[in-house]
Amino acid sequence: MSDAAAFGLAMVVVLVVVALLIGVLALCRWSVHQARDDNGGPRKGAFARHVAGIAPCTLEEFHPFAERILATNGVRLFERRQWGRIGGYTSLSLMSYGSIVTIWYAPAPGGTGFTVESRPRQPLLLYDWGRNQSLADRIAHGLLPAWTG
Image (cartoon, rainbow, N blue to C red):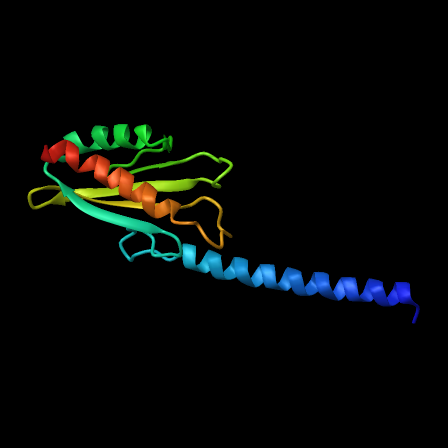
């Protein structure tokens, strides 16, 4: 076998192994991201970060205020709106592929209970450098002080 043929065969083997590894990683990340509560609540996946709290207000007061807090944190709201959930996304930047942010809310004793979820837009992300946790924290802290002060 000539050197060129051996090199070509080695390259084919390397490409097949890399493709298989990427496929396995993608399948693992996809299955983790598809996990949901039985009731359709927040995801329990890799890099999905959750912060919960109770805002002392009614549902009617909470919904428009939460939309304003999302907008001030650079989140563009989804077109399709649903009662009990507000969602949006951050745009692509040099530091991040962006995030998908969802606020799940429902009546709770003493006001409106909410859970802020932030997860990456890019499904094959291997590490998020804490960006989703900091975004979820900023949004939750933006929701709480307005009602407690």
